[in-house]
Every structure is written in structure tokens, then in C-alpha cells.
Amino acid sequence: MPELPEAEVVRRQLHAAVVGATINHIRVGREDIVRQGVESLSWYSGSRITEVERHGKSVVLICERGVEKRVVVAELGMTGLLLFAREAIPSAKHVHVMMSLANGPQPTLWYWNARRFGRVYLLDQENWNAYRQRRFGSDPFAMTSDEFVDLIKSCRGRIKAVLLNQRRIAGIGNIYANEVLFRAGIHPYARGCRLSKRRIRALFETLQRVLEEAILRGGSSIRSFVAPDGKPGRFQRRHLVYQKTGALCPTGCGNRIRSLMDERSSFVCSTCQKR
View (cartoon, rainbow, N blue to C red):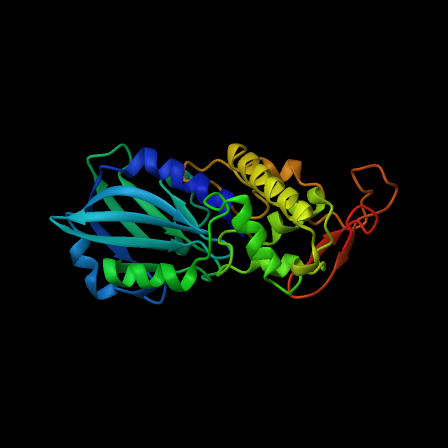
């Protein structure tokens, strides 16, 4: 499932390829994928893409037409991809939205999703502002260490559940929650409010460091994720615990990684990760 690093990889590639381009038209293959704004498709014809942003795990195209701004929000969901390389499309039947472009290096941008958990939203400025406030918590790269400490200390729930709560911290999914907690030496079931400020600050530093490295390595390609140019990520080669049940702990402690089942699988070394 694409998480913050994968969405940021997509954003950076799209920023270089489509900012300044004009949208000729948007064609929708499945109307249930476009949850809001399908009736406003015609507005986007002739609009210009002025910016590409990332909010949590979503990629957002900012479009202008005259003095009016609207957005195209691509929620990637479990298997969603934004592709401009035709040869990268795994199966044409799963292309649900196609954007034809002019005045740029890429003539077409496809939204592909096999499992259809993701959605595309076409929103005016007012609805976009409401969408952001409703969906997204703080971005890990926009927070200060003190803000992160205050957030975690205010939560009585398990620390992993806090990290996965998109309305508190936007963009972290199961892959990076597991990897970050292992590297920080914190058990996923530890209560956020009971962690010391020192451990929370160390967790914050680890979180930013892991996310930055994952972005530089193109994200994690475990199932279907590829960047818009069709290239897979490489950070999965650096995973220490995710989906490594039964493997020896990479710290050399002698223990083996075990999985804990709750809403999402947790991969833990009970020796190295303390509550």
C-alpha cells in the first residue's frame, strides 16, 4: 500500500513532468472511482496545472483556469498508481481515469487501481479546504519535535495505533510504522502517554530519518507500487522487520521476529522493543 514515501516519490516526479501543462480533457472509466465532482469534468479542460502537492498518502494536482482554482485529489488506496509511462501499466482494464495533457513532456497521465479502494476527487477550493481539515492530521515533515511529543503524550492508546491514525499524523502506514518502531526500540503496544519525552523525541528523529531514506530510495515496492515512470522502489531491501516473521533479529540479539495480530500485523523483536 503506498504510504507517505511512495506518495512523495510520485509527487516529485509529477512536479517535474506536469507543472505548467494544460489539461486537454479528463476521461473517466469508472464513475464510482470519482466520488465527487464528476459533473465538473468539463471545467478542467483548458485548465493549467500549477503545482503538485502531497497531503498524507494523497497526491494533489492544483489546477487554475482564469482566477479560479480547483484540485484533482488522487487517493492511492491499496494499489493505486499514477503513471505516465504506457509500458508501466500492468493492465489497461484497471485504468479508471485518464488525463490528456498539452504543453509538457508527458502527453497522458493515468490513474490505475486494481482493487479500487482508492478514489479521485475533483474539488473546488471550498470543498478542498473542508476535505483537508476532515482527512489529514499533521505531516511528519511539518511537525516540530515538541509538537510530536505533545501529540504522543496526549494519547492513551497504543503508539502504533497513534502513528497509523491519519487524522493525527498523516501518511504513515503499516510498513513504516513497523520499521520506525523497531529502529526506535519501542514496542507497538506501548502506550503513547507512558513513553518518556526522551524516547518520543528519539522516535520522531527515527521517523523522519526512515521516511527520508525511503523517499531517496524510491519508496517500497512490495506488491504493485511503481513510480510514474514505471520504476519500482528499492527501500524494501532495507526493511528490517516488516513481513519477516521467524527471521533472526537484525541487531544480533539472538531473538526471532514474531508477528502480533490486531487490526494490522505488527512485526516485533520482544528483546529489542520495550513497552
